[in-house]
Length: 104
Image (cartoon, rainbow, N blue to C red; front, top):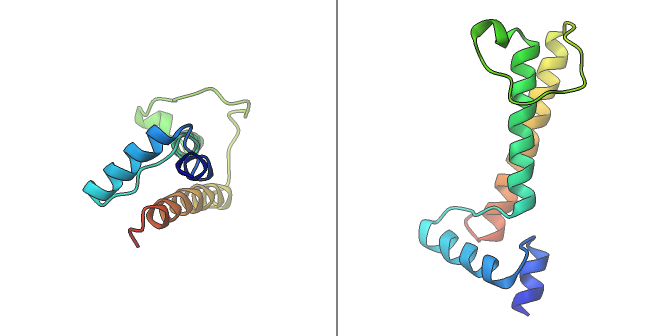
């Protein structure tokens, strides 16, 4: 049953799930699985791209990855939409983590 629960929660094995459960209980904070961590890293990259496309490189902010997109201008509306999408993904991850560990 523990192995099934670990898989359902997105953890590779019951040991990682149990460790995450203990950390969440002791710290009263959600612990993310690998998929959630990966999504947050991708969200970070997306925001880096938004910053660069908005002229962030002129501020000395480094580019964290290379993307196929050209260096053309991007509209404020597009920037807002991309930031909103990233924010919604991150908030969904946080919400699911809070629910998973009964921290709501």
